[in-house]
Length: 321
Image 1 (cartoon, rainbow, N blue to C red):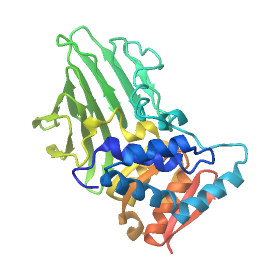
Image 2 (cartoon, rainbow, N blue to C red):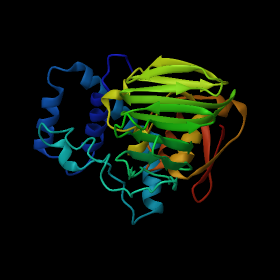
Image 3 (tube, rainbow, N blue to C red):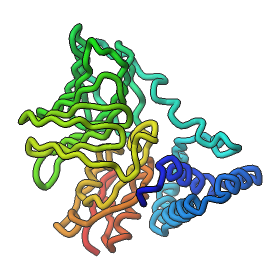
Image 4 (cartoon, rainbow, N blue to C red):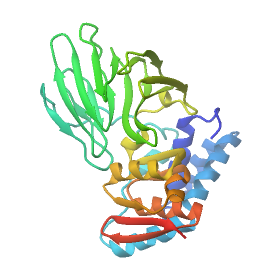
């Protein structure tokens, strides 16, 4: 995706591509789509890309197989049909950040579950979302708000200059006053790394070695071996409401298959065994829906000519074809 592509347009293109596959697609929806595309060749190109991904034969095969295996289940829709009619296409985006959830008392241990996460409201007015296989211990003290994280979480911080809000993971501390940011703990070939993506405002990232760096909206900081590196995002996350994983989407840009599988397992609860170094190192780019993990796996193995084998309920193996 080019640097000039807006994440909002990309997201809406994916929604349009999905919506017009529905048998209930109406002339009113078609007119609204044409209005959205009018004079925007960049949007038309985005729509073609998402159509191509949906039309992938492997995805269709996996969808049909899943439908036969689970006749009583329907695909989870993350967006209401009404969002595609008229000019208010994006009106429903971003309204679920502080809706629902449970109040987390001081010192609570909160554990994330696979699937599109629900927000959890903290007693100070902040909110968090946890990815699967993740947990955070909350301590809302009189002088400081400290959360100790394992895994991945998205944090929306209620402003309170008298009580800094910090997230600690693997000796890395991320501190903000009032902002939105995502923190991810992951395993890499070089060891553990912590990734911080800022959606709004500015955060201070400090490594276990004491290296400190300010990171602002639209930037990512990666901490590995005590060193903090900062980069600008290709598609600024500041233009979105919550991370893709929190809405049931997985997005990758030349990520290794091993890293992709780690994210898929965390988000969905499936188990995937990779056989051989070429499979583990294969690079994956694309956007996949997490509500049907077999679809995503089928599309990925098709790209590289690998073989996907079901080993049991929600258990798969990927090997060279």
